[in-house]
Image (cartoon, rainbow, N blue to C red; front, side, top):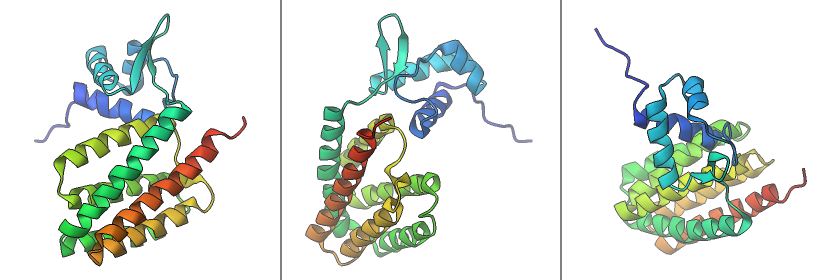
Length: 216
């Protein structure tokens, strides 16, 4: 007889908290009380405490005087720095993928783009598949150090809240930008792949600026 995996481990609590931050269910500035989180996720306080320490080490949670643990936030300057580094590193990943990606990996990326063309009006699902596409490019780059850095940067993006893909027309634009990256990778055009990836991140940054400066 099989048993369901325990939901009381520190890693499980971490995954639950990270997903809540990433989805915006726990937005920047939210107070994180161990007891409340334990009840919310149906787990004990000890793994919640472990998860909060891990998230704090990653910069996603911080301690404020008189408030305790809260979800961290990124200011405009930090957001600009983050997207600048994303442009550089995502471009590098695409450049390397153009050299190292196998025909099977290229086919997988093409299939991802075709699938996402059918999700352009579903920003929540598209945001999830968008992450999978980028992860596939990282894997095809064959550089574990670069992969680790990019995954850590993705965690920081969760602090911005929401997704740029919810902005009208951005979903369709993003998918076609992915298509351009894949086309360059398939053509073994390293410089073209890097340029396409950089352009993709620059466009996402422009949309993010618009979201962060909206009144209200």
